[in-house]
Image (cartoon, rainbow, N blue to C red):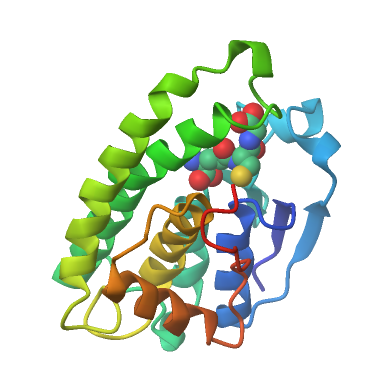
Length: 208
Ligand SMILES: N[C@@H](CCC(=O)N[C@@H](CS)C(=O)NCC(=O)O)C(=O)O
């Protein structure tokens, strides 16, 4: 039987991995669960930057939430949480994950880094960057909104780990209030929140 250990902490990106594990119905050992784990030597043995999440699957370390979630989904092909490697649907999974993680999430993350002082101290914040982040996030969000006009989920019209990964990014945008006006994104997020295993935390829009 596969053994899975997950370094996690509440609403951090580890929520993607926890949600995937719940959908997969797999047991796992939860580690970390303490802000002090971030940057620790213990975590750096798994993640070179000492970030969350990080996993150990059958003794092998793996970092990056999207990689961990996909690896977990691949462990349970019967659950159809991810398309088979080599299929066109898997390429669509890769496409949407790359889009969310490169064209959307960095703008939310950069805004958060320049708003909260848990990574970059306040005296080094560059507030002037935030409007640019919003503009670039919303340009991509508009594209995602259009893609969701005719389908409830991103790959093959059915729920998959792609939605877990992208949904987390969208919820990040919800926190900053940057999804305002995108009706398909709002409906999609509600669809994700309605799933019994959803680990996304509800934000009052624009709370950050
Ligand atoms: N791309 C990474 C991002 C990981 C990340 O930035 N995690 C945050 C918590 S959500 C963290 O550990 N931050 C501490 C830091 O940036 O030093 C992933 O998706 O796993």
